[in-house]
Amino acid sequence: MSEYFEKSSRSCEGCQCMAPIFSFLNKEELKLVDANKIHVNFKAGETIKKQGTFMSHVLSVNSGLAKVYIEGIEGRSSILRIVKPTSFIGGPGIYFDQRHHFTITALTDSAVCFINLQVFKDILKGNQSFAEEFLRDFSRDVLRVYNRLIFLTQKQMPGRMADALLYLHDEIFNLPRFPMILSRFELADLSAMSRESAVKILRDFQKEGLVKISDHEMELFDVEALRKISRIG
Amino acid sequence: MSEYFEKSSRSCEGCQCMAPIFSFLNKEELKLVDANKIHVNFKAGETIKKQGTFMSHVLSVNSGLAKVYIEGIEGRSSILRIVKPTSFIGGPGIYFDQRHHFTITALTDSAVCFINLQVFKDILKGNQSFAEEFLRDFSRDVLRVYNRLIFLTQKQMPGRMADALLYLHDEIFNLPRFPMILSRFELADLSAMSRESAVKILRDFQKEGLVKISDHEMELFDVEALRKISRIG
DNA sequence: ACGCAAAATTGATATATATCAACTTTTATT
DNA sequence: AATAAAAGTTGATATATATCAATTTTGCGT
Image (cartoon, rainbow over all chains, first blue to last red; front, side):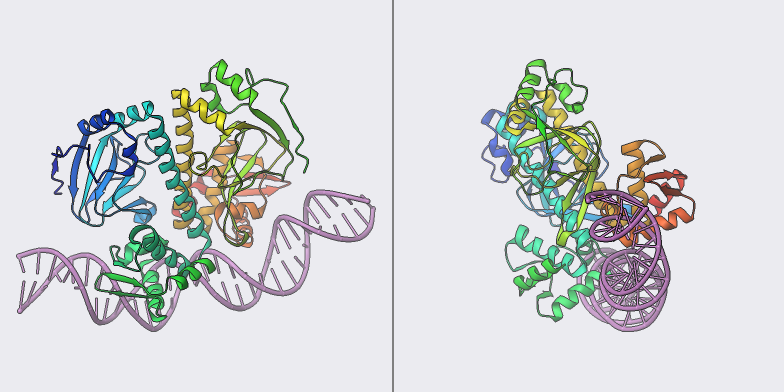
């Protein structure tokens, strides 16, 4: 565990790497956040927050990529989302039971700010537009889960894998060629299948010339074909 | 379509059938709700709100039972929850895009109040404890979906069907014997399988003496055995 | 009470998917 | 560089699940 942390030397004011939601804060509120945050660096693979633990802070991912996943039955996991900078991470525990309902793990070296939950809530109370943006962000998250529920239960494997790749393409990298940050195992967790099945589907995609995987890089040759596979299910 | 509606003669104040969340309102706020609500009766089978439509109101189910489901791919549906009186129904559209992201259908004759969304939001702005209760309610909903995501993707059919029955038992009726409000088709939508599979699993449960279905009644003889099946997956 | 339409049921079959076991490649460690 | 450990791959097989087609039951309107 090498979570070397620091009382950030930079202040939040003027910080380029805070999550967009915090742009709704005024100077005073930002100072409050500044005084009640902890900045921590994580190495790839490290656990940022563990499901089930007490939620003392909310998170802002400043740099790096992370996976947010629910630890389910017998060691199996469902990845809810991949987080890219800069993103806010709260979750349903904030106003329900003050617990984390998912685990967050760094996929690459990452920098994260932890903002004291009570301070966050206090600011939320007094700033209407901040509160509304928070709700918008939360709601977007919820809709993502709705979508996952539908496509994980109603599509079959090729469609689910196509969706996983398109998710990385459309939401994370916006490029047909991107670093393969997820292992086959994680890709399986993202598309609700076994590792072996994930490997086989990817091999099929590769044979058909839709994608190419090499040297930790994924290249999508035919995004439209993938979209079609996604549609067909 | 026999949605005969009425400007309710009773006022909200003192109404015994409003959703618990509204108990956080003061008299004045309640009057505002009163002046901006519509009370509608639905017959079993009627659609209360349709996925994709503009969200002009939030709902309070005063009596009757309803199903909340997402219309997914090629006519397939996923039931998110069964709603019993008295319950508030909002959804992620409130602060995101003002649309309904699920369809609500009456399972029995029902009475529903539609509260103007803008008025609802205005009150939320000015009443902190109401806002927090709203967030708690919303978060509870979200956690329900998390759970469904996990058990629908990580358990196999017997476990999923056991969960569906236990859901009705634990959350809706709190009795080992209850009216079978869901068709086999709907039970299948609740446990993410085909109708035929649902029938077969139920037959197995019945053969093993775990449940009995007759005359629109479901009786759970061995709740603990069902819990075990749920656990095993 | 009759007849129709919808829902439920059934067994046979096809398909999708997981599991298993063996093996290869990659990555990390000493 | 050698070795171990982890990740990835593969084909064979078993299992879970959906689909299909035929049949029965139930509910409903006249």
